[in-house]
Length: 111
Image (cartoon, rainbow, N blue to C red; front, side, top):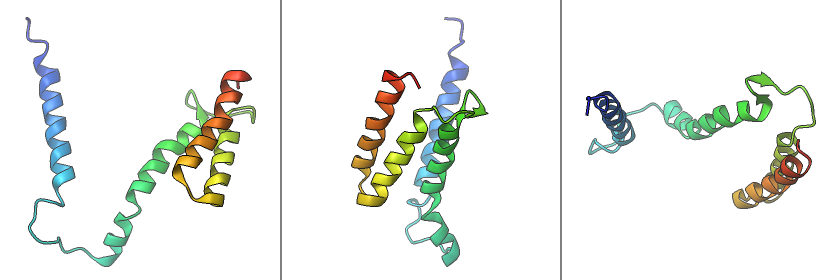
């Protein structure tokens, strides 16, 4: 072995340590950390904001550029899934409806 595995191993261990520390940061203290109410309220929306920040570009971009045509299977799938969610408020049904619209358009029609 020529030692090429050392740098990736250090990177993996470092990233694992940073992830563990940041995830456990709020569980380490014995008492609640003092936070202003506005920050506590804002932290409730952080997962939703992160999810939207990851998914929104995937919905409106293809190969790094904005979608130029409405003939893209993602757009009707998102519309159908959003409609179902606002109608029934169920996550599993939203995923099923979105995929039920997306797959036939993408695989069947090649959109």
